[in-house]
Image (cartoon, rainbow, N blue to C red; front, side, top):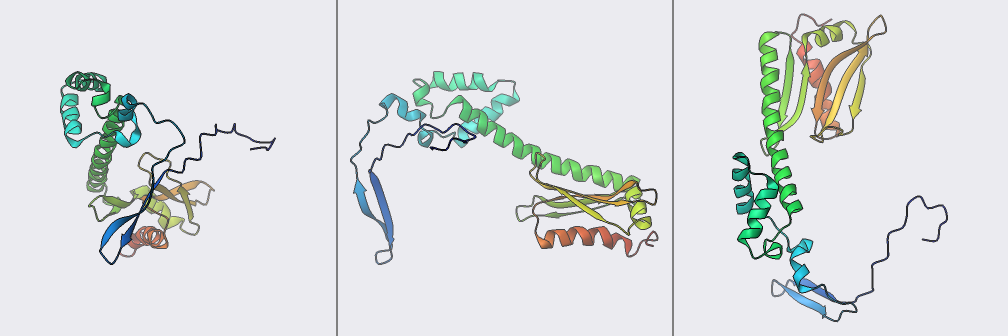
Length: 231
C-alpha cells in the first residue's frame, strides 16, 4: 500500500475486523454436521431491513420466471417490461426476489446456450453439405459426455492437395480461446515452393492435452492413407 510506483489506485479498505463466525464440522460418530463455534457479536451496524432483498445472497431468478420470460420474449415483450410486470405483481422491487440485471444475465446465459447448440448443429450441417458437393472435402468431430460437440477438424479439397504436395513443413498454430465459444482454434499450415502460406486444415479443440493434439495430427494424416493424392 505504501509503494510509490503503484500502477493501480488501491481499493478502499472495507474490512472492520468483525469476529462474528459460524463454524460447522462433519462428525463421523453421529454421521451429521455439528456446530463447533458460534459468535454472533458484530462490531458494525447491520444493513437496513429494506435493503436485505437486494443482497446477492438473497437474489435468485427461478425456473418459473425464466420460462415465463422466455414465453413473453417470443411474443415481443422486452425484458424491462417483464421486470415492470413482476414489480406490479409484487408489493415492490424488494419483494420481486431479483433485479433487472439479474434477469438480463439469466436470459443472456440461456440465449448463449441455445446459440451454441444451434451453431454446432448448423456447423455440422454445413460441413456435411460441403462433403456432399466436394468428394475430397473431409471433416471429423467428437462428442462429449453431455452429447455436445467436442473436437472438430475440417479440410477442403485444395487444402488436402496442398498437403499432398507441400507436407515437408507443418506449422501448428493455436489461438487461445479468443472466440465466443471459448474453444481453441487451430490452423495447420505449410509453405509452398513459392514461399506462399498454404492452409492444410483447421480445428476447434476443447483443451490442450497431449491426447487432443495427437487426435488433430492423426486426423490430418489418416485421410491420406487410402487416398490417391497421398505422395
